[in-house]
Length: 300
Ligand code: NDP
Image 1 (cartoon, helix red, strand yellow):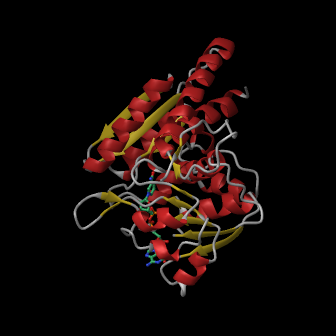
Image 2 (spheres, rainbow, N blue to C red):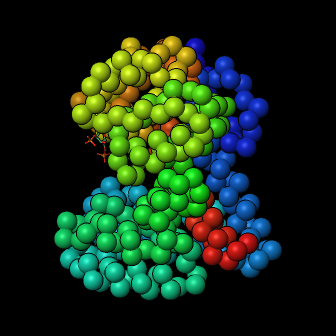
Image 3 (cartoon, rainbow, N blue to C red):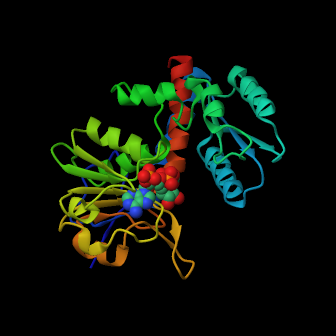
């Protein structure tokens, strides 16, 4: 029988016999804490954190993400501004909007929904966003701060992964952690964060050999590949912690992760489900970054 971890991240008095890490409930608890913090910021300093979300084009999945992010802002009391631009928007027009948002004193966080249409250079846009308002934490300045051990605004999904580990009472120090996937938005930053928590980290990718053997030796497995159930449950070490970032559709069209959950859950001590694991944490961390940005900008 499996039980579920649902408590707030700040409540570390968890029953560690609990196995399934409930990201939905942990994210909800975090949003409640943020709502309280936003109320206090308004009362004590007259500051309402503001997030601008920019969407270029009509990608349906991106449209859903943007609506969810806006709804979550409203729920915690963050001022939110949506900028929905047509697919024909030029890079110069988008840069001009970013300039305006960089200068807007009511906006503390700016998020440009990725991917962008192919005629717009993603790196140019990310670098144009003020590093102080970089709600996604993708700006090279913030990435550099993370790498040098002085993090400010950090990428949301990796932050969410670390929050889940903390909520589950997992101590990273001295553990062998493996990250599968080396993207700038998930794999690389989460590897750096694990290192920052004194884990010994192996970072794997599509050219890695003997992946199965490496996973079998790991105490903490972070899967961020984007391939339905590629990591077999039998590869997981007994008692390991498994955080599955993957969001895929299986052959039946059902949402699933990168890990073969039905088998992995029998071996892992702690595991995140898909959906309901990492996914809800990403938006919660975006809200947290917006509040952090407002605090940094106003020095409160
Ligand atoms: P990318 O496609 O950018 O990166 C995938 C990584 O997986 C690459 O580093 C790639 O290696 C590696 N990879 C691919 N095939 C293999 C293989 N056979 N063995 C080992 N490694 C492999 O994906 P993202 O990082 O953007 O996303 C990863 C997953 O996480 C996706 O399913 C995505 O939907 C999900 N996601 C979920 C979020 C959430 O909020 N829940 C947020 C962001 C992402 P190489 O570099 O060599 O190509």
